[in-house]
Amino acid sequence: MTTMLREFIVDGYNLLYKLFPDWQQHSLQYKREQVEIMLLGFQQSMHQKVTVVYDGQHPQGPFRDAGALNRVFTSSGHSADAWIIDYLKSLGSNAQLFTIVSSDRFICRHAAACGASYMFSEDFIGTYLSGAKGRDKVKETGTNRKKFGSGQLSQKEVDRWMILFGKAEE
Image 1 (cartoon, rainbow, N blue to C red):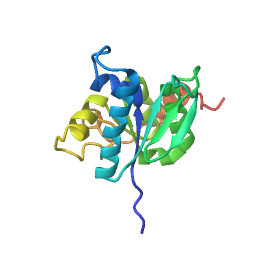
Image 2: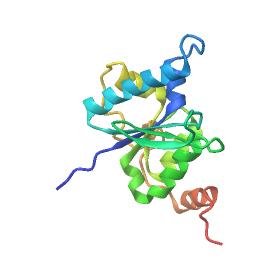
Image 3: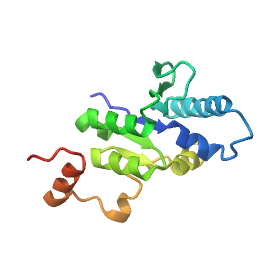
């Protein structure tokens, strides 16, 4: 029986600005390179696949690079947030195999609604990028699952989410 590995999708600039809050200390390219080095280290040590998504501000324009670390630069009119949400929606029930890393609560709510796990960038940094202990924090769906319970949604809640995502039957 093959075990499916969890894939992490990282909101690139969200993580970058949490790691490097001083905007003027280094160039954006340097900061991206440092973030990617850290994510590669995480990917190799944890044997997890990582995709980092940046808003489309790259000299080559929008592209997807599936090297050792998957990198996505969105088109100029498409944010990383929108790309992540659209990607999760396209996964259907497979979204449960993904963990979204972002401190953007809008993205995290969408991740949970799609069945994916999420971690706030600060938690990801503290848990995985600074050598901290507690590597099992993402086993549950969402970081607030203990606070709000892990029971199934009621039909009323499902209907509300379906309306929110434009999937309600008319």
